[in-house]
Image 1 (cartoon, rainbow, N blue to C red):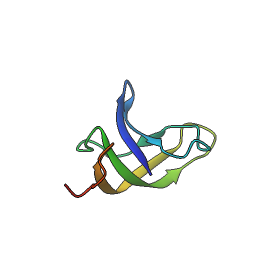
Image 2: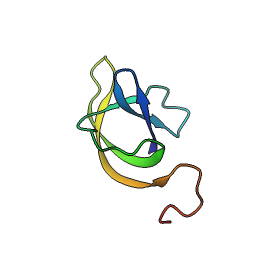
Image 3: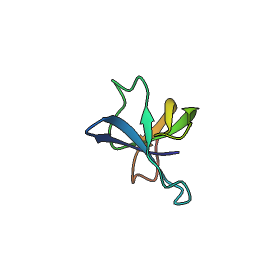
Image 4: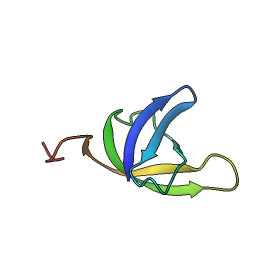
Length: 68
């Protein structure tokens, strides 16, 4: 789980857990809402930048009730 952000290479997910120190490139992220929290399924992590697909968008980052 992390926050969806825009980078020069495309959309990424920055993990909330500080033990995961790499950003994940989001595959097929044309409609991913920047600034929202999401759950990501990892699809590739073979030495390069890890990649994944959004399983679900939870809500805006920083809000206590993600359903609002």
